[in-house]
Length: 634
Image (tube, rainbow, N blue to C red; front, side, top):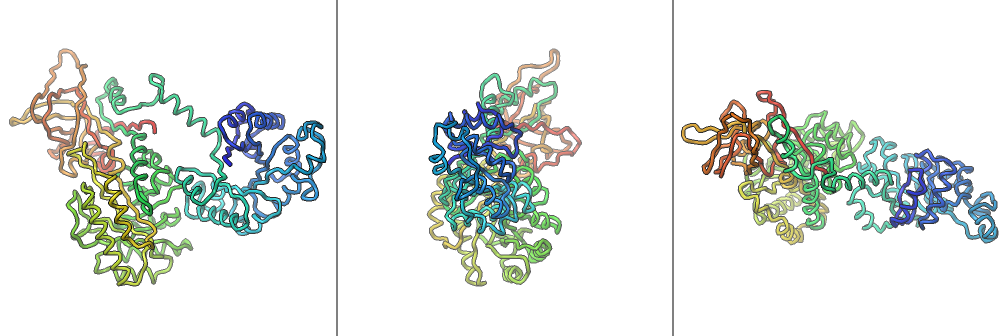
C-alpha cells in the first residue's frame, strides 16, 4: 500500500492524488479544517480516481466515525491511540453487529438503495488503522496490536518524539527504538505495520524488513517542493542561481567589488550519493561537520550520509537545527562537561573519547541523565602511516589515547557507570591521495583492533576508520579513485570479523571540497623586485586553506571588460603572479602561478573551496567586510 496524507480541502486535489498512482488518500480531518460537505466531496473524488478514501478522524468520536463511513470512507485512521480501549471504541462504531454496533441507514454507502442492506452489512469492512504517537502506548503496545478488528498500525514518529522528550527528532535513537518496538509487536501479532519513510535510507531499511505498507508524506510539502523545482529549472524564470558562473556574473554587475563563496548543493548531493552508493555492506559514511559547518550544507547531506560527526557543542547545535533527526557521532580532543551533557541530552549515537579523564566526564553526564553512552576509544596508533598533509597519529600529537595507556582506558569503560564500549576510533591522517596506501592503513587498523580484542578481552561492534580521503589541489582533474578504493575495501572486509557489524567513515573534505568556489575581484596589480602581485578584495581571512597548507591553490580568471574611464588599469601577462589578499601580512597569499593575462577588475575564482575555507579563517582580522555566501538550489 502506498498512501499519502491529504490535508488540503480540495476534491480536485484528491483526484490528482489518485491519478498519480497512490493506493490510499488519507483525508486529514485531524489537522485540517474541512467541512462535512467538502469532506464528502473529497471522498467522491477518491472514488472517481480509483484511490481508497481513508479519513484520519479528529478524535475517537463514534458519531464522527459513523458519519464519514456513511459518506463512503473505506478506512478510519485513529490518531493518538494510547490504549486498547481507544481502538475498541472505534471498531465498535465502525463495524456492524456482531463485530460492532454501527448504526445502519440507506445512504450513499449503499448507493441510496442500489446495494441491498443485507449484502452491505455482510461485506462492509472498513480498514481500521491505529496511529502510535505517545509514549504511554509503548507500555501496552502488545495489548493494542492484538485488539480484535484492528487491521493496521501506523507509526507516528513525529508526535512520538515529542512524547519521548526529544521533540521533532524522528531519527533520534530513542524514537527509532520506539518505532522498532511497534514494528516488532505488529510482526509478533500478525498485524500490518505501516511506516512513514522520511529520507531515502528509510525506504531501503523498511523494504529490507519486508514492510510494504508506507505513507509517503503529505501533499502540501510535496507540492511546494515540486513547484520550487519546476520554476528553478526553467532558464529565464528562476529566482535562484543555477551555477557558480551565474553567481559571479551577477556580482560583477553589483557596485561593490566581487567577494563571495558559492556552493553548489545539488552537485554536493550528487557527489555524496555516489560516494555512499559505492560503499560495500557494513560500511557507513558520516559527514565531518568541521569541513564546512553551514547548516545549509548539513541539511543538503541529511538523508544521504549515515549521519554527522561533530567535535563541539556548537557543531552539535548546527546539526540539531539543520538535521534534527540525524544520527550524530561526537568527539573532539577535549569536550567540556557541558558539551558532553548536551550530547547525552541530544541522544548522540556514539561518543569518541580520547582520554581516561574524558571517560569520567562522559560517565558523569550519562549517569546524571539516567542513560548509558556508547563509547569508541580513539587510539593514537603507532605507524607507519602513508604520507599525508596532516598526521594525527603514529607520532607525538595531542590526539587520541597512547597505545600504552589503552589498558587503563578499557578498564575505565568497564568500571565506570553509564558507559559501554562499542569499539575503537582510529583517525590517523588527513588528505591521503592514494587508495592503495589507504587500504593498507585499514588493514593495519584491523590487525591492531584484533590484537586489542585478544589482549584485553573485549569485542568491538563498531570500528571507525576516520576520514583522511584526500583532494589533490595540485591536480583537481585526478580525483581520489573512490570506486577502486571501494572495490579493494570490499575484498578487505572479507578479512574483518563478522562481529564488527559497522565500519564507519567520517569524511569532510572529500565530500564537500568540490562543491564550492571562492571568487574575489582583483583590486590592484603591481610589480616589486621583479615579481608580479595581484591584490584581491579578500584573502586568507576568508579562505585560509592555502596558507594553512602552504600550497598554491588552483584558480581561474574571469575577465571583466568594464573599467572606469580615465583610470589606469595595471595588468600582468605571460608571467608568474602571486595572488594575495588585503591583509597587512606577507602570509596573506593564496596562490602563485603563471597567467596569460590578469588585470585589475578581473575576478579570480579559486576552485574546490567548499571545505576548510571560510570555516577555518580568521574572519575579523582588520575588520574587513565578510564575503557574500551564496548557496545554489539543492
